[in-house]
Length: 163
Image 1 (cartoon, rainbow, N blue to C red):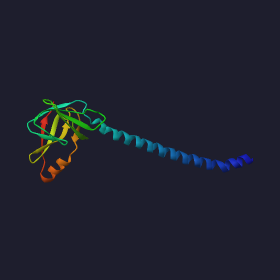
Image 2 (image 1 turned 120 degrees about the vertical axis):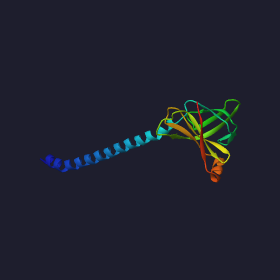
Image 3 (image 1 turned 180 degrees about the vertical axis):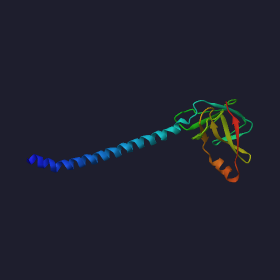
């Protein structure tokens, strides 16, 4: 009989503890699910990489990063898929520049590969590279030279078709 009295006294406390544990586990489960989802979203921009090269031709000199490149035929590639750096290589001569970039996306896939430039006054700066059939691209990080040029003039965007 004493056992039944003890069981009636302790049982409600145990069921309350189980309820608290269950609530904690549900909260932790939801938190882990949210963190997993946010982790997945943070990895998505890594897909914005150039896994092939894009060739283009310009009839004007332009800045790629801190390097001023002459008019000519160029190839844009990403030499290290783990780093957000582009290589802009002159196809006709041994001249290259390296540019830091930021991944960017579009709602619609690009119809063709292209390279766009921002022009401030008489000076052109590499701006973006789009890949045919993809919704991702890359945007060249602005340099101090570009920021100085942008402070004094309005940008005019123009594009060179890529292959």
